[in-house]
Length: 270
Ligand code: DGL
Image 1 (cartoon, rainbow, N blue to C red):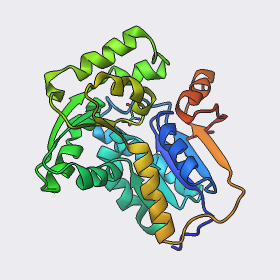
Image 2 (cartoon, rainbow, N blue to C red):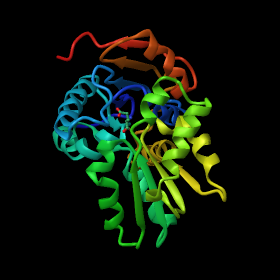
Image 3 (tube, rainbow, N blue to C red):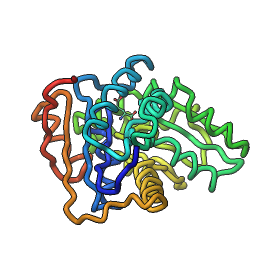
């Protein structure tokens, strides 16, 4: 099946955290139409089984294919970790599937040979071992030090991001010996860019805190340019769909997207 430049880009996440990636994409590719799907009925994905996340991802993939998307971007580390290969196989040539992990691995490959890199993420992403496998496959002597930080997503979702107590929780995680002596830290969850400044403030001397959102947007842009799939139209239309609408989610979108967006409830899964 032929893909056309005018088709929209589909993006999905367990909820609204993936809007950090959508925002980076919009900044880099303003002419692209976006269909964002937040699976708010099933979040968080970070403590679900791989099988459950795979089933949700295939269903969402179907929705985005029905909406004629040329690209399906998995804007969630947990789903990128456990469902990307399956979704790629399922989608086949109907659309190009992207994840938020490979662009980060590409970045590390260029800059951090023989260094130690930290990773913070949800339990599912850490337990999947996907970053460890991909970094080992680079054969560059990079040591990965990982820590699951499950309290951070609910903290951010509750917009509890600038209080002293949230700073203490963040620091408490970063102080753990598992993350000792690192040269850079990967934010392995699409919620975490919201607290990037707090995380950076922990490290004296400074280390690089790697946020996959911009790297992912840049790699998608390079792909679209290479395949001549950049949308030439200046009338981009964006839609934001959720599987369970609440006004609270709608209000929280500002935190991730920098402006409030209108969320629409998906009428049904089928
Ligand atoms: N956005 C998810 C991720 O990047 C975290 C939120 C969740 O657990 O659903 O892993």
